[in-house]
Length: 82
Image (tube, rainbow, N blue to C red):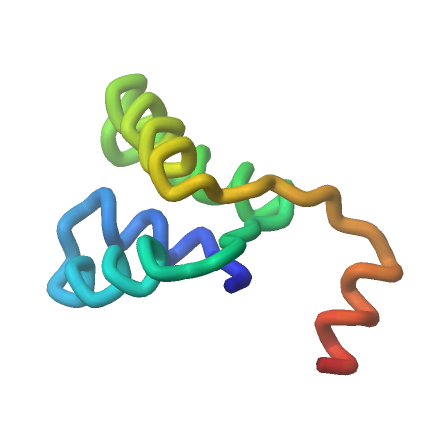
């Protein structure tokens, strides 16, 4: 499962769909997020929730075992071709 930053933000901010998103993330065999999306999630959570939010994001990534992948042109092309 490729995780978008908005999924993480929605879970952490308790948006209406957060329970369904958290269940999907928990059930993912190999959740991954690309480094730029991780950065975006960190920036959004930091702006809205401060340092404690950034810590919660790190905890969420750890508990869900989300792997952070580097983004490069080949990865973008592969994602587009899928």
